[in-house]
Length: 156
Image (tube, rainbow, N blue to C red; front, side, top):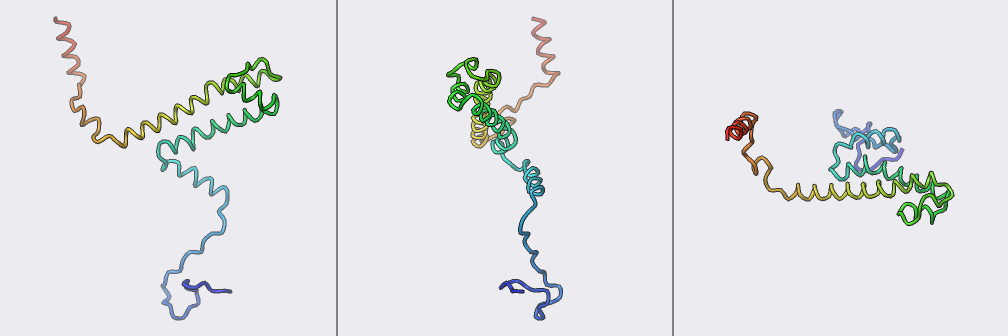
C-alpha cells in the first residue's frame, strides 16, 4: 500500500499510541445524503438566495416545463409569441395549453421579477439602516392611551 507523505499510518513505531489520525475523505457522497444536506442548509441562506432556491426555482422550473411542452405542441415561435402576449392563444393548434402558457406569461414572470426586485430593495435598505425602528419611534401608544385619546375626542 502506498503511503501518503505527511499522514500517520496505524503501524508507525515512532508515533505515540494516542496520536490522532486524520479521518479518510469519503470519495463520493450518496445523492440522498447530498440532497438531504442541501435541504437542511436552507435556513442558513440569506433572503434573496433562500427565495430563489426554495420558492423561485420550483416556479421557474414549472414555467420552463410548460413552455417546453407548449413549444413541442404548437411550435417554438408560437409558444414564444403566446407567452409574451404577441399572439392570441386561441389562434394556436392547442389553445388550452397555450392559454395556460399565456396566463403564466402574464402573471408568473412579472411576479417572479417583482419578488426578486423586492428582496433586493429590502436587503439594500436593511444594510443601510443605521438604527432600528424602535429607536426611531420610541413612543408606543398603548391601548389605555388610545382609549383616553378617544374619550377626549368624544367629550369635545
